[in-house]
Structure formats: structure tokens, C-alpha cells
Image (cartoon, rainbow, N blue to C red; front, side, top):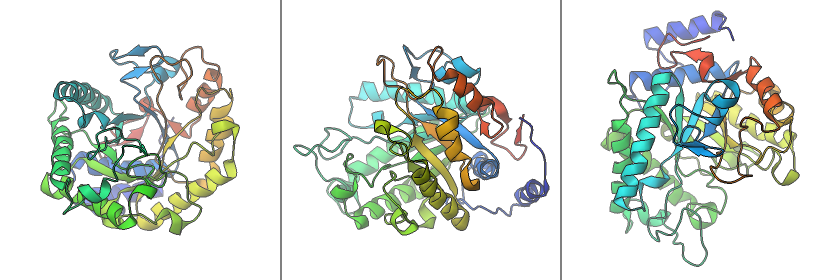
Length: 379
């Protein structure tokens, strides 16, 4: 895949070297590498899209914790461009377990950064008030968003949890001393009811208050300057106003995302038209607000459709000149025979996935270099 300079790229380069960025981040003190990533992601979204896979380095179909391995690499020869990790193990667990989880994630984030890949972080946050799960359980769960906001009974506890996240963000230093940037995506799928921070369990005002505090506390108090903040509901919206119903404001989000499984074949239901419509909304909003946009989660469990990659996913992504930075499919479980979202050697969708991989529109880790600098280019 070749990078062909054009007038638009030349203009962007000129703006970058003079310090006049077209797409301002919400963190004015972001590290040089984080600022470069932000700008390069926007450039990529105009002609390409990055492919991502959740937990790709931690484990895969039938294996776990093997050096420099991913199922996607086993199939294509390249890791995904975007590697998903999760902060779910950072609270609500025994200290030893938290330390073990942190060490594994730190190693993988640094390795991804040094290879030139990108890390995105979801947060399946254990309920701090009931400590039972990140899922909502009618019998035991507590509506905790109102408790962790400023003035709430669990606010100080929440600040301690955020400090754990900040400590991790400060720890992911490469050999050259620079910090690995990460796309941080808290409180995802908030428009559903399955998580304790979901729409039925918290008011709009409390949700926005917690989101704004989270960003401000990490950025302004704890000094985290290597995060790009992503806002990503599930696909339960049909208009710009519905999408923005719990939006925390332009000063508190860098990326507009969406998680969408339902339109991509879940339960045998395909609705490409609906998927494109929703992605058009977030793409247009991102352009208007000078933000990034992404399909932050999707996939088809077990991939029983052998041409799903090109005939469903790629068709959607190429529609209507959408400007999306990345698409991420969910994880491949280690032990389950059916819970996987990316192909592994021998899986029936491998031939089609190779077509997806070889399409000039899609980018994997081996397709670009220096994404954390002004010298970014495609190979």
C-alpha cells in the first residue's frame, strides 16, 4: 500500500509543522506523540481505515500470553493496526490480581507502541457501590453514577480508582522514555441497560457530570496527557440529536464512536442501510466538530458467513465516503469453540479475510510507519 502525497496532505503537513492544527484535541498539554497520533488518525480516515481486534495480544483461539502472537497475525502476517485492551481488572479485585493484570497490559501496550501499533482501551468497570459486576443485576446492583459524581458517597473511592488508571498511563514508557498514547473509551454502550452506567440506571445529568469529572481529573489533576478520549454509545440512535443526548461537550471528547453488532448479522439480521445511516451521522458530526470518528466495536460471533468481511463489513465501511479512523471487532476467547470475532488459521472466513486484508482501503500494523510523528507514511 503506497502513500501518495497530494495537496491536502501537503497542507496538513504544513499546518502540523507550524503548529496550527486543524483538529484540536481536548488536552492542550497532550504529549507530542499523542498529538501526532490524533492528526495522523484524521488523515488516515479520509482514504483508509485501520483494523482493530480486542485482546488480540493477550490471548486468542486456543492460546494465551504468547510472545508477539495474535490470531490476526497468524492469518495475515501482520498484527491488527489497533489492539484493544480493558481496564476491567483495575478495581474490584484482590491486589495481587490487579498487579498481575497491570503488568501484562503494560507489557503489551509498550510492545504495541514500539512496533508502531495503536492501543484502544475499553473499561468494563466493576460497580464500585455493589462490587458485583459491570453488568446490571436487578437483584443486587446499585445505581452508582449518582454516587461517584462530585458530592456523592463514593466520590473519593472513584478518585482512587482513577488514580490507578493514571498510574498506569504514566507507566507505559518505551525504551526511549516516551509514553505510549492510548484511546480511552469509558462508559461505553451507555444507551443500553446491560451495564450499571446504562441509560435506565442513571440520569442524563449524572452521566455527563461523571464523564466531565473523569476527563478533568485525569487530565488536569492527575496529569495524564497520553489519552485520546472516545465517546461511544451502542447503536440505539437514529438522528444526530439522539446521538448527542448524553454527549458531555466538545471539551470532553476527542472521538465519536459507535458499537454496533445488531446491524452486522447478530441473530442472523443484517441491516447494512441502518449501519451506514448511523455511521454517516457520527462521521458528519466528527467532521463538523473537528473530531475523530470510529466504529469502536462490531463483529459477527463465530463468523459463520464466509464472505462477511468483504460483502458486509467492507461494503459498509466504504459507503458514502465515511471518514472513520478504525473498526474494531471483539475478542477471540481462549477456550470457547464459538466465541470469536476474528479468523484464525483454518477458520472458514480466512480466504475472504485475506481479501479484506489486501484491499488498499484497510490498514493493518504492517501497512504504515511512524504514526506517532510528523513523518507518518504508508508503506
